[in-house]
Amino acid sequence: MALKKVRRTLDVKSPEKTPRSRAFFLELILNLLIFSLCAVVALQVFVESKLSIEESAAITQLSLDAQSLAEEFKATGGKLEGMSPTSGGSDITYYYDSNLVLTDAEHARYSLVITNASQRENGVAAITIDAYAGEKLLFSLQGASYQPREGR
Image (tube, rainbow, N blue to C red; front, side, top):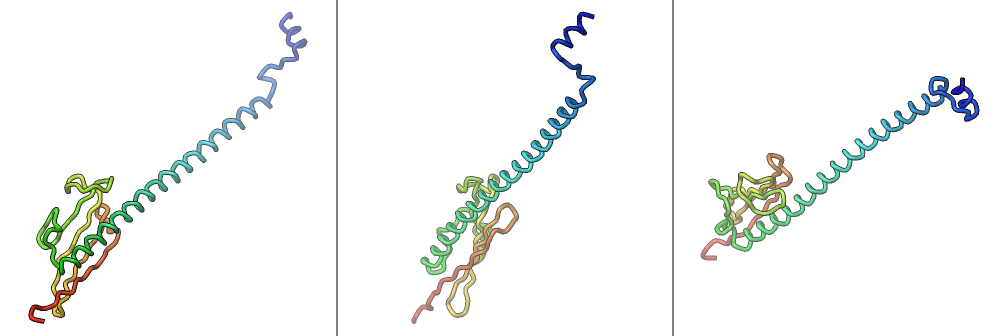
C-alpha cells in the first residue's frame, strides 16, 4: 500500500503499462541498425577508393619507367644490352613490389616485360613494353629505334 502511494506521488509509471517506451526502444534499435548498415557501405566505398588510388599511382610510376626504358632503347640504337635485371630468353622483365621498388620475382606485385626487339628490313628495331599487376595487363607501350645500315 505504501508503494502505491509513492508511485502516485512521483507519477512514475511501470514499464509494463507504457507502450510508448517499447516503441521508443524499438525505434532506437532500428536507427542503430540503419546507421550500422550505412557505415558498412561507406567503409566499402573508402576501401575501394584507396585501392583505386594505389592502382592509379602504380600505373603512373610504371608508365614513367616504361617510357624511360623505351627512350633508353631508342638512345642505344635499338640494343637491349645493359637493360636487364632479369632476362628470360628474348624477354627482359623488371619486377616491382607493392611500393614500386625493384625486387625479385617472388615478391613482385607489378612487372614490366620488354618483349623481343625485332629487326625490320628498313632498319627499324621495335620493342613492346607490357605492364602487369599480377596477371592483369595494365598497359602496353611500343618503342622503336632507327638503325641505319652500315655503309650509308
